[in-house]
Each structure stands twice: as structure tokens, then as C-alpha cells.
View 1 (cartoon, rainbow, N blue to C red):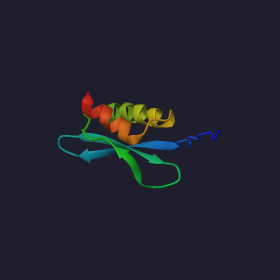
View 2 (cartoon, rainbow, N blue to C red):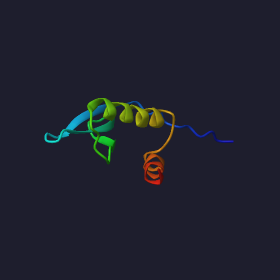
View 3 (cartoon, helix red, strand yellow):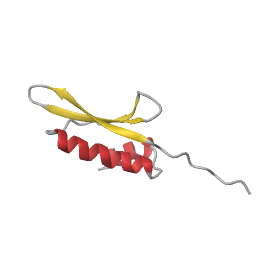
View 4 (tube, one colour):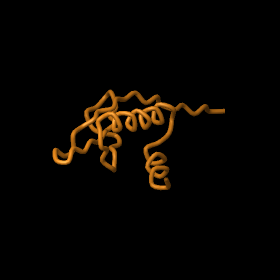
Length: 78
């Protein structure tokens, strides 16, 4: 019987300033192998710390095997 292998996700979170006045922050999660964003925040955050925490939560979900599509669907349902 064939075994399904799930590829491990190794990535990083980058917090970026989206707007200067008022200051708004966002995050993006990228894969270690590339420089492109796999998923980015949809809503801006009031602080870099808030954006960092939210981005880390998404990265942890990806590392545990959730898909980008599943994460986006869950965020729209909330």
C-alpha cells in the first residue's frame, strides 16, 4: 500500500510597514527556498508586535501541515 508523504514546510515571517500615517503593519510568510510570499496578511495591524504574533500563528499552522487554502477559508469564516 503506498504511503503518502507530506512535504515539510520550512518558512519565515516578515513584518512590514504598510502605511506611515497612520502606521499600519502587515506580515508575510515565505518559504526558506524562495523569496516570494506564500501568504500575506489581509487586514493591517496597529503594531508590529500584533502583526508578528499573527504571522507566527500562520507559520505554525503551515508547519503543522495546514494548507494556505485552508487557512484563508478559516480566516474568512471567522
